[in-house]
Image (cartoon, rainbow, N blue to C red; front, side, top):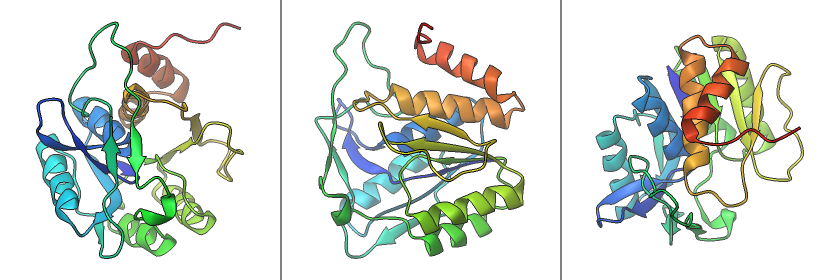
Length: 219
């Protein structure tokens, strides 16, 4: 089982269908498309946008039993955004740049250490745990401990230019690009699915890069 820990957002697909977006959803959907059993641990607001996110996850086949509701903060909204997690951008099209609203992270739902501890306690069969959003130090420590307890491979996404996280040496750390059209999340999900299938990290990364259409940086 692949467990993606992150904060989904509400987004509209180009055809107007309400759906979910953000790196956590992109990664979870990509892993699901490659045959993985995927659960999303996250939090949305207790609002209509949150209801739409729950329905979208169900349509995508992503487990959301551990998706919590925040009665105070609203579900984030992707504005001017990327294609949905089950869509592919047109070839040669300029990648759209999405803004996450509210822009202040303090005004969005957040995952506390107790949230993650409770969720991962009921998902003990995880083989890969993917952390797609920055977590507070205490919450990160809980996720690291849960991965160790389950003998799960740990994948951590950090913002561009941030300091290395305090994670075990065998964890895989990805630095997210400043602007993303959704392809980075799909790369992370493809990588996680390969790990879940028993592929070694180096080979899984090469396969994910090739599948996403990225080119390795020149030495």
